Amino acid sequence: MHHRCPMADPSDSIRLLSLAAHTIERRDAEVLLAWCWRRTRTQLLASAGEPVPPTVAADFERACLQRAAGVPVAYLLGRREFWSMDFVVSPAVLVPRPETELLVQRLLHLVIAPAAQVADLGTGSGAIAIALATERPNWHVTGTDASPEALAVARENGTRLVGGRVEWMMGNWYAAVEGRRFDALVSNPPYIAADDPVLESDGLRHEPRRALTPGGDGTIRADDRDPCPGPLRRRPDGGPRRILRRAHVIPGRPFQPHGTMPLAEAP
Picture 1 (cartoon, rainbow, N blue to C red):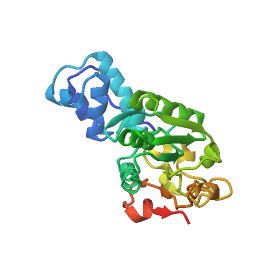
Picture 2 (tube, rainbow, N blue to C red):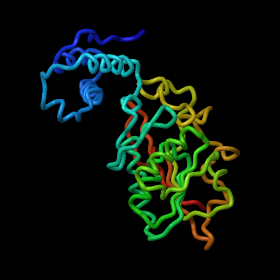
Picture 3 (cartoon, rainbow, N blue to C red):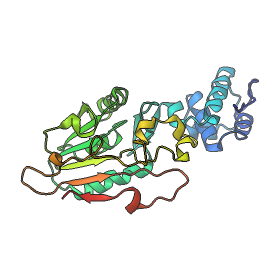
Picture 4 (cartoon, one colour):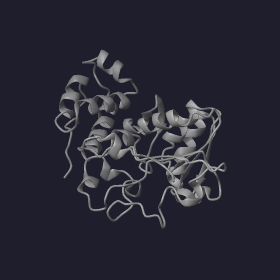
């Protein structure tokens, strides 16, 4: 069943936002109207009450219908901010979450070498890899993904944001970089159980399922999906690698830094 925003008649911005607020969050409505009107949210709020052109009102109504159906705002806009940068996003990739920035911060704290080899396994939009490349220009950062559609999004973001300084490789987790050695591995892998009802919650049901759950009980099996196989566990000098994974927060559940973002030193 679809909710409908009754906006067939052009009106002022205050009335349109009030109508939309019956079916979607007020902030989402403001962001969407600003986007349809090619304005910033600040500009929209500063001109409250201004008549809205009919074409903008029609675009806004369509966007409201999609948002009411659970489509993430980031997919409607085609972009999402992460690490103070604008990333292109599409239904081929997970929407970057603010809490994933903690994963970037943790790795930057752990790996202090001015030059390092780092791989982001299951890169999606490339947010983690690009953030690392931005902060550490002398690092060689590689992003891998098994989805060609996701990798295309990552490449686009990389070219625009870091001038192509991230290497992109297609393949399932470590298979894309098999035989290579890295100083650190970072990953935000799928870990939700396949039968968890949260997968059908607002937003998540529109995101790529394979990026949310590996199937079964949510455990990534070492035989085909282990983000850190034996050959990648040690540096050439024999020292332990740093492995960071899971920075996701499931909507409606508390964020536990040591549970959802565990740090593991490879044996």
